[in-house]
Amino acid sequence: MSRLIGLRGLAVAGFVLVSAPAFADEAGFPYTDENCGYTTTYEAPPARAVTLSNNATEMMLALGLEDRMAGTSYMANLKISPQYEAAYNKVPVLSPLVATTEQLIEAEADFVYAGYPDGFSESRHTRDQLHDLGMKTRLNTEGCNLGKFGFEELYAEIRSMSAIFGVRERGEALIADIEERLAEVEAKLDGVEAMPVFIFNGGESAPRAVLGNTMLSHVVERAGGANIFGDVANRYGQVSWEQIAERAPEYIVVYYSGTAGGQVVGDPAGELGQARIEILKANPTVENVPGIAGEKFVTIDSVWGQPGPSSIDAVEKLARAFHPDRIEK
Image 1 (tube, rainbow, N blue to C red):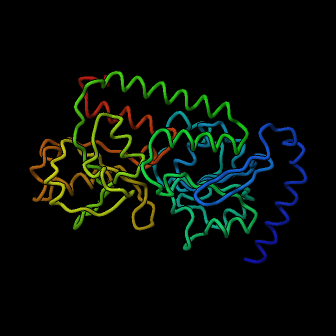
Image 2: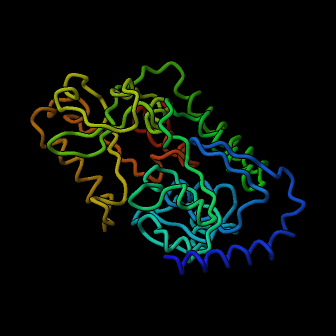
Image 3: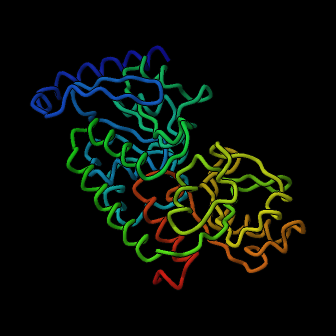
């Protein structure tokens, strides 16, 4: 590791000497970023960013920053949203899982962005450890678990990222597009009664739920639903089959990622998404729950389920499912 760190130090030093003049006249720098207890000052935009989650990747691409990216990771076998596919294909994929410290060093990363707290952990690399290697970091603030997270918090995330990279106008344009689409959905749903929704995150002996402090819970709300566990002030957690039966959701959002047990899943939609539907249908405690008995299921993978530019796509998809009489397919 010491040899790798030494090489990293040389690479960083060489990069700064070569690239600093190009950014010397950038407006908005130095910029100080406050993020989840970390204060980071940027003298210039990062030039070799690496993402550690799919929503972080989409955020960078939505801001047109593929030319500032040295790599992506943790897409597993999920698919990038179609509007970002061309840009995504220009960026190296370092790993289908979270990029390792060694991979970050090899990529000469100067900025590491995670959309999910697992990107920075004792088992992988902490933010402090990456800072010691000369890499600045940011965590999407939903991962700080500071309370409810919705579009206003997402807009703040977009503004922070666009400021870090000196592309504030792009950030405001992205926000304006999301706001316009969100307003269109809300106009169509005006006056509807919120539909009780269970957001299922897997689990057979004991079910796991997506709780109130998540973007996905807020997305369900903006789509005309009401998370039956939205009153729980946490991000994810275990509930009981009896609680689900008692709260009688009328629709089930099945949430899944691209991994299971830390391993990449070959067919996430089938092996995780559809498999979770079968778990619900086979459980006698909840077989008469309206959303399960009526097979009112809709799947959302983590590309759309975690906070990012595709959160608005998730709102539109769920609104069509919950209220097909109001939203055209």
